[in-house]
Each structure stands twice: as C-alpha cells, then as structure tokens.
Image 1: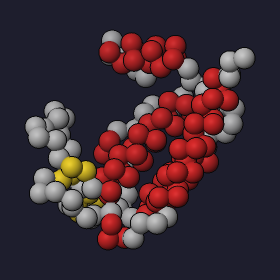
Image 2 (image 1 turned 90 degrees about the vertical axis):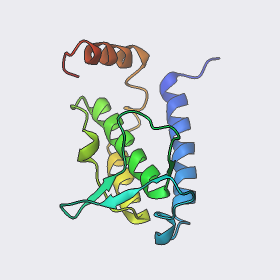
Image 3 (image 1 turned 180 degrees about the vertical axis):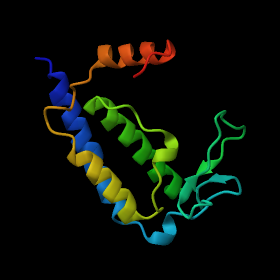
Image 4 (image 1 turned 120 degrees about the vertical axis):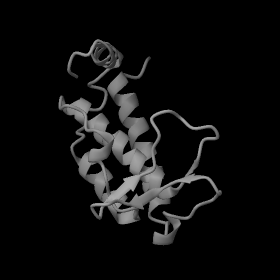
Length: 143
C-alpha cells in the first residue's frame, strides 16, 4: 500500500531534522568560519554591522567552497522561503535573512521557522502548487 505524501514528507523531514540537530550541536563557534580552501564563500561583517553572505548571481567557475557559516545561512534562507510558501506569504529576499554565523543563531532560526510547521502543513504544498507558483513567477505575476 502506498504511503500518503504528507506522511512520507513528514517522515523525511523528521529524519533530516534529527540528523541536522545531531551534527549542529557538536560544532564549536570557530568551526563556522573555518575556511577549508583558499577560495571560500562565508559570512562577512557588513557595513551596517550585520552579517552578509558571499554571493554571486551567476555561479562562478571555480565554485567557492562554502564555510559552515555560509551553509547554515543558506539553509536558513531556503527554509525561510519554504515556510513563506507554505504559509502563503511572499517569499523573503536573500538579503532579508542575515544571522550571526554561530550554532545558536542557526538553531534559533531553524527552530523559529520549524515551529510554524505543523503536521498538517507538511505535504500541503504539493507538486502542482509549486509548479503553479513557478509559472506565475516566470510570467512576472506575484507569488
């Protein structure tokens, strides 16, 4: 018997979340900004005092290696936009998501967004809704 989409999606979410938390809580603050290669994307102090992610609208060649700080910011951005779609809100811009590159800041962002995700919402937005949102964006009609 096939597993209903919301049940399958919730199971995948719960597994991914538990693995994320398991690894996240083992990181030290200095791990977040460690640069594993000469060419890296990370979070840098911005002119207004906040944190700004390295970014290029066109993917560079070679692609920079992301730091943990950049990856956790990117997850926070993706997660925030996902929640916006699930809640029927306009999706946030990349520049709207800025946090300190630390374990606690990342966890706080994820928990705040994750707490909005009730069991009934996982799987609510299926492939047809996502495809419609994409068509509307490409046509220049609001999200």
